[in-house]
Image (cartoon, rainbow over all chains, first blue to last red; front, side, top):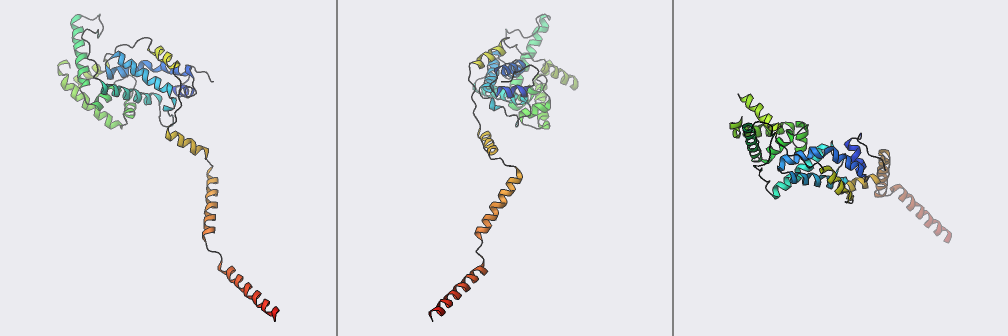
Length: 184
Length: 104
């Protein structure tokens, strides 16, 4: 069996995973866990739930590596974003996400107390308002403001063209601007 | 004013808080995967592709095979040559007459 190394790109690792190479799977997990966790967290606002989703997604890939079909998907991350988003949506349908804990340390504790409180409130309100957006708008926002994901990639993940995605983002931001008036 | 609000909202959206994941999340996933066997379920689409690949022939071969089959179908479906029928009946009449002559 060929050895997997950190120099190999995702597609090479996936080909090895399809041959049952555990080392390649470990490399892929280490490379992408953090990024997919962040995405899942933005959907679910709960650490345990987000970790479970990421774990499920990777284990599904390991158990059935034929799910990844390079001829049908341009990029692994684009395809896997879709997998993670679908799992998040399924979970959201099953149960309402936990509300943000008021005692949870939200921000840098070295900042002055007043500022901490204002920013914490600001963040809480923002999450609440994002959560109240229509599903597609929320999805567009989560994908586009996720680190390193271009609008084109986000559109591909959502199965939209670029203009439709931009329109969703614009509507989401208009709603948020209106509802977050007090903080802007 | 509106631009300022747009910028502020963008900043807020970019700085959305994400609670850090457990430091051992990746290791946990890798460890769990080690205990799971890999299954190789093949979807209907993949199965069809594999099946087609088994019978894959280069294009000239397809063309030759199609021409042969078409030729055979046309050949069998056409009625036999009417001239050869006429020849057959002439031969049998001549044979009959010559038999008669032999008797005389």
